[in-house]
Amino acid sequence: MGKYDFAGKVVLITGSSSGIGAECARQFARCGAQVVITGYEAADVVSMVAEIEQITGTKPYHKTGNLTESGFAEALIDGTVKHYGRLDVLVNNAGSIRANDALSSPDFMATFEWIIELNLKSTVRMMHLAIDHLAQTKGVIVNTSSISAVTPNQGVSYCSSKAAINMATQCAAKEFGPRGVRVNAVNPGPIKTNIGRYINKPQLMFGSDDLCFETKLTVQKRNGDPADVANLVLFLASSEASYITGAYHLIDGGFMCH
View: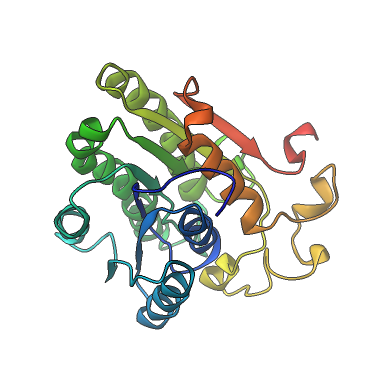
């Protein structure tokens, strides 16, 4: 059993088939939660489902697809509640970056629309769809933002989407607070995931600490691990954080100190 007690709780984590989302799923499962695994690459979903089943002894509800697909978010929420009968924690973790994310790029607007659709709209859509279920359980929302929300260290589309997630988090916390639902965001710095594959840089934020340009700007001179972020997500979702809402939380190895 993990540090926190999530026994009987149902936790839906978008983008839970790899990276930070997958580590969140592992940790919630170890703490007794019933987790939902979802992602758009079938092989990754199948692998994580098997891993969670090994941890809990029960095959978790799962759904493969893309949150930008029409009707997928609705089916994900409906399927979760139908399968488990409730929803206690929503972790909006799905997101991505793309190459050509510069205003001067010829295909910038296509990049902008895609990133806003996935990073921002899917987060807002999931909160919109989940609130009535979360209000019944006095639940929690944790959104994955980024240090790019507060410093222009990536392209226009990505930074804009993450800045908007910070504000959406605070607005949702203000609106949902009277219904007993807390909403927070985590803002990771350079974390060892495979996100770089989306911009043809598979080594970015993956493996050695000297492969990410942001690493040298951290105080600790290293990249974080997905577990570092998952630890914060679980804390914010737990009863120990009962007075924390409407805030975004940097977890960046001191990157913003520079």
